[in-house]
Amino acid sequence: MSNSPLFSIITITYNAATTLPPTLRSVEQQSFKDYEYIVIDGASRDNTVELVKQSPLATRLVSEPDKGLYDAMNKGIRMAVGEYLIFLNAGDSFHSDDTLQQIADAIGDNRPGVVYGETAIVDTERRFLMMRRLKAPEQLTWRSFAQGMLVCHQAFIARRDIAPEYDLQYRFSADVDWCIKCMKQTDELLNTHLTLIDYLNEGATTRNHRASLKERYAVMCHHYGSIPTFLRHIGFAFRYAIARIQGKN
Image 1 (cartoon, rainbow, N blue to C red):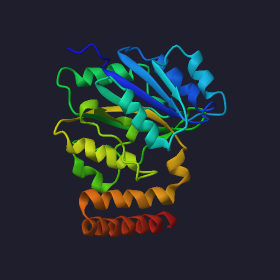
Image 2 (image 1 turned 60 degrees about the horizontal axis):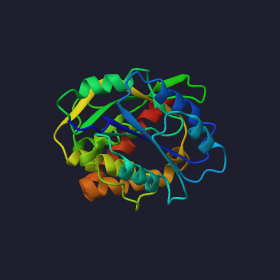
Image 3 (image 1 turned 30 degrees about the vertical axis):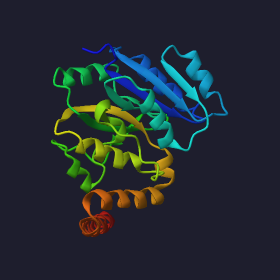
Image 4 (image 1 turned 135 degrees about the horizontal axis):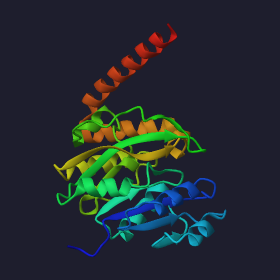
């Protein structure tokens, strides 16, 4: 067996001093300790870097200008030595103190290519708001994302040896493309049936929702074909319209 840690937890930050502390606490409180913690900072101007330096957690810290979120994630991938990659954004946290232990138990000796679970949405006070609208399918395959991003990026854990770097042509939705590419590299995808992540109800993708949707459409066309994607989105729009009408009645 390798002496490398089981998990490489990667957090990307930029001026995240107000949202980072719950993330740091979440990692520090994990009962399972076979991980490395990598923080890639985009040359923050607040005290984000000081917060990380004050924490005993960070195995590696880089603070320098980058070309955006996914460029920073690629730096994390290149630095990682763990068997599995977990991207935990500033503001997000593990759902419970034994989440990593539960994931490790689920992985066992089988070492599936992808491990996944559910995501809870929380507010800035860490209060539960709702479960993520899209529920993880019982059996995930690369074709599953034709129906949308059914698993949150933070709750999608890929074995490092099958994980490519993020495609920087996408500014907001490279994570969708990345997940699909990971799934294409393995037939072994494990549903933990657990809530893995508390996801903070804000972020760059939310603030740039329209651009993100356009990029996701382009990603879908690339992987699933233009005509099937177009027809599928007509169906999405129709179901959305019906739901809106029913909601008003």
